[in-house]
Image (tube, rainbow, N blue to C red; front, side):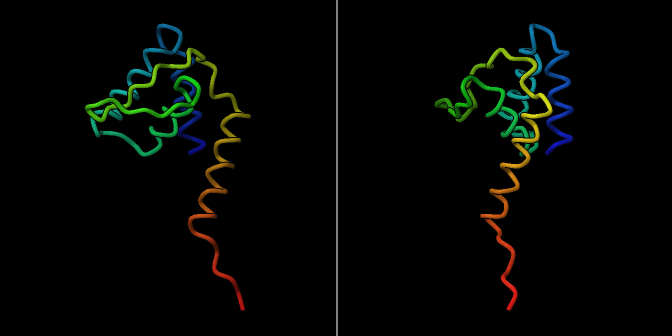
Length: 97
């Protein structure tokens, strides 16, 4: 996840139209079904106010948050840590006896 967000964050910073072009690329990929599950995290964090909404055709339809520098290292670390905690909740380590 960390490498994915670092790479996508770099592409977002360097993309045309203040990052919007790359956001549209990821959103199109997600909506086509040809996506990485990590695209969902990217879209939810790069979208407006962290919203999650799907249109009547089932497509992701949240606008870009207009922050091309969104994925700073501290934010990536926060996301990775949150995913780690969720992973432990979903699949806890078995208790030793």
